[in-house]
Length: 289
Image 1 (spheres, helix red, strand yellow):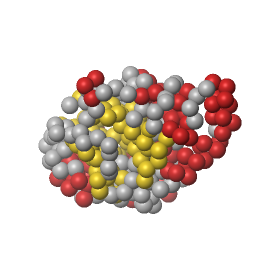
Image 2: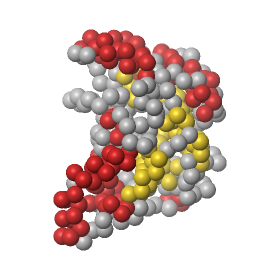
Image 3: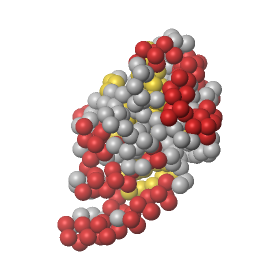
């Protein structure tokens, strides 16, 4: 793993869309990379995270910390494949994975499903045991202990029904602070949690986009109910950013992200209540300190 002196602080959006579906030429589900305070942190592991990390210049065998904000598939589906691919790429040190309680069941199930391949590669290729390299840690509200005083991490349980364990994350160093909202309905306590941050990465929806998705989806009425109860419209994300006095609002987990007729300007106009800088996320977007 690179040392602090070798790693410039940066935030990379690896996957920018909300929901698990993928469409031709469209963006990938949610995942992000933040390199800060000498640590390399992956936030969520939606489908495509492995390729996204490689395209961002990350050597998979240098994975460090991984955080799964909640157990919806667009946030955790590719965690196991990412770790297995890193292992086959030469991973030989421990990786800590933080997430909600059901994360352990997911990991145990993944290991069981790949038992034949893992055992074979240990015996045939002389690899270390993948099962010994991954440490699962459960997230809870408050300070998240890390073995590095240069980076402070906090978690906040947000409002994402029917999911109970869904956590916003705040990363702080002496000169940079980045907050990830995770999936959440409009949730004013998040503004307190994100107070004076440099970058607030907040999920966002457009009302016109929700209407369009409901129109083309077979379970439209139930989907509309879920989206309205569990996610945040772009103007409300702007309100949270303004209440927090964030410097930059980065719209992410976009709904819709891959339907024609929804341009960047519409997102920017929807967030005009925010007086700071607004950036509309896309796969491969890089923000530096």
